Amino acid sequence: MNLEKIVRENIWQLKPYSCARDEFSGEASVWLDANESPYNNPYNRYPDPLQSKVKAKLAGMRGAVPEQMFLGVGSDECIDTVYRVFCNPGIDNVVAIAPSYGMYEVCADINDVAYRKAMLTEDFDIDIQAIFEKVDQHTKVVWICSPNNPTGNAFSRNSIEAICAGFAGIVVVDEAYIDFSDKGSMVGLLYKYPNLIVLQTMSKAWGSASIRLGIAFASPQIIAIFNKVKYPYNINLLTQNYALEMLNRNSEVQTWVDVTIQQRQAMAEQLAALPIVEKIFPSDANFLLARVTDADGIYNYLCNRGIVVRNRNNVPLCKGCIRFTVGTAEENTNLINALSNYGK
Ligand SMILES: *Cc1c(COP(=O)(O)O)cnc(C)c1O
Image (tube, rainbow, N blue to C red):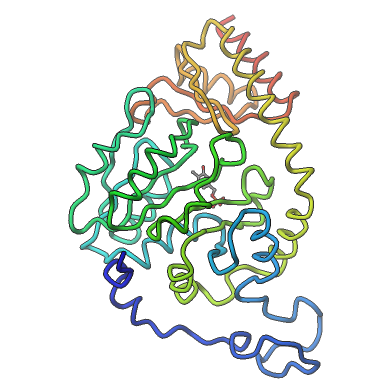
């Protein structure tokens, strides 16, 4: 792959802003280089622009080296950065599986990049043929989300690899829900596919949506370009410190994941027993997509009882479907109880 041909010309040429902490990042006792206040330690100081402590910790846990990691303000920043680095506004396009996560299309619209949808099959499997049919010489990126939101299923590694191998541009695999799946991560394949970008996040399994921390794994060459495009101090100190704390609590996090997977199974069985539930789709994530008799009616009924779920009735291929996040045992019981009284 020739990265120079895929990256936007202006980005390839970009001379990045050089911040004080880029020029000197060693140990010192007197810091008079960045016009910071000398008071209110440690928040008076600009944070580490490349988040080396967080990346070092993540590296050991996720099987990648720090040079293969970019940290963003949520996956949102990673998604937007993909467009800003690779897609010329008004000229280039991307191809994405559909239905999938809404932010890929919103960021395409913001960046004036045409967004082409390759529908999944009726049983929500990836349609490789449909993806390749949408690709033309202006297609820079293919978006895959696995496990997919809102359908919940993960795609086979063979299918994803076929796209990485058969497409000359960038393939992004969003693994926001990977910790809930027994299909492994694609991070280990970064060496095999230089056009692969894998997204993960602390927002789901790690229980830290509020701190806004997303991770893009890719080749060191791609990461170096992302680093020159990002805001210099994109990840604040509070977030970096809290992320480190959570990464150190990983056995506790694994327990949350295990319990959530058990609850997902229990919830699937309880939902299936309700007459208003027509079908529950297999899930590799922390939510269940179910087809119900009257999605709008059931959604409004639950809202009136203070239970908020996601109505996917108007999403193509998801007609009649509601997406239920798996909560605590108590929350799930409240949901099932409410649903069993619907229409009574
Ligand atoms: C929830 C979710 C994310 C997380 O986004 P953040 O900006 O990291 O909170 C990313 N991708 C998908 C598909 C999601 O459902």
